[in-house]
Length: 395
Image (tube, rainbow, N blue to C red; front, side):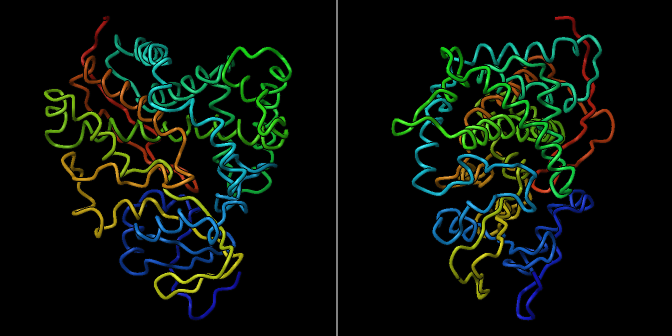
């Protein structure tokens, strides 16, 4: 799409790997200079960076539809992401199907298994006194967690590789289609193994579920399972690394949390506010609207920039400061807001809590042992490497 002369513009290109090395600074500059900005990247899109604008767009599905895709640029998937790329009323029915399984209460049945996953991930690292907490912990724990809950028994490394390759190929059309086919083939095998058979796991209950008396169509079912597998672990990988990074690098924070475990929740929320694992999601304008003087036209893409909204000084005083005493910590938009708020939020927070509590209990003197490496993708951001050292233990 050609940029119109009267459009406020900012050169935000989320396909440029260099952006990820200075993402917070770039988003702050855009929000301060051009809070509603047009970018010519990825075929052209509007970027909304202010907290209130992101909330308004998230809650107005008649104006900002998800049915044309939520990724900018699009992935190579052959079907929509379900229910994230549906509007009501179909969205409501499919969301209701899975929501009850991912509440805080429902997840308690899985807590012993999740604790075991965390324990077993850390166990081989303890004697060495050194580890890369992204590679050794953040990679296996979330994928093992969602596999446990759904009932997927495949090697976690294969699931992790398929999901990561799928996400990382976004923006490279030919490769994206290839990676999507690989992931879809794996998921279709999991679905076929459960279709029409007695339900023995959570995934099987979705495969054989009915809505209004009818089975879920194959395309919708595949999109639903894909979202749960990919979103169910890929974003938690980013959150885990940045959480431990903040614990170790914020002056006095570790000592405070060791002395007062009630701060574990605020540490998680403040980390997620400052470092949203998913820093943007897309919408498409369905009917003309105006935002801060800019006219958004039907068919134009809109990026909801959570990474900027979470640091909006009109909502968060001293937004770049890590502050576990900050009022209203849970107001961040890292999991979205409204009908499309992330279903997996309680699971992600439980995994982060169990990991942080393990570190506090067993690695209280953990320190950075090298240079952390930041990275991500077109809508993800986090640490790709977090080398640490700690007192060796055989416990």
